Length: 309
Image 1 (cartoon, rainbow, N blue to C red):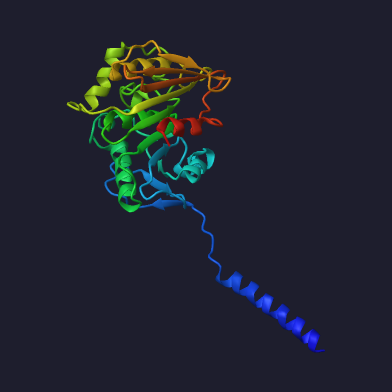
Image 2 (image 1 turned 135 degrees about the vertical axis):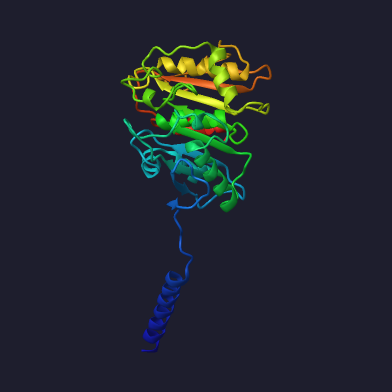
């Protein structure tokens, strides 16, 4: 009997320890998408969501990731790989949502005069407020701020790179257009647009001047640029990536002849444009056979790698 009591007491002791462990063990936390309703000046009336990974450095990098027309920040969070990459690499992701209703549903403003100038207002200025919010509330690193987006978000990416070269270190635009391509809002719908009608051509200097005019007098470093486009894109013609390439090579003072060409994946053809110091300032990646459907698998990781994250 004594032996049985001894065994039962031991079992009871083990159960007590197990229960104690269940009650008092530290609870695991999981990062989630959070909406920020008051983030500062918001002339574009955008919505802001932010994803902050649980594991991150003391001063994390910031990536702004923007959806296409008809999308949303939460939708781009779910439909792209940037949040999972943030978990792996410890950067904060800002997901803006455009609210301007156009013939193409809600799209980021890249056509108004305000959207084409440093501190001009509209959506670009709202995004800068979001970046400042993350710098202040999550100790974001002002030296590591990047931007990316798809379609309308890709167009807004180049707008931010042109308007705020003092803020962003690099950007990756999927299925975008040259900065300043849209004359006005009436030119935005693809079925009436001169910009995406397939016949928009300017000289490299003409395109480059539009970027320089966005922030007159700016003489600092320009953010590096990565461009992506599907060769079978019928909504935003593939030809526009060549116009984008002309624009940014002129801004960087580079030859339009790439310094190298390779294929990181079988369907990707990457042209790189480097300066005299060998540093790559511009990448233009054509995706063979792809329509208006970027980014696809692995492309977000390639963008983050281009950022140096």
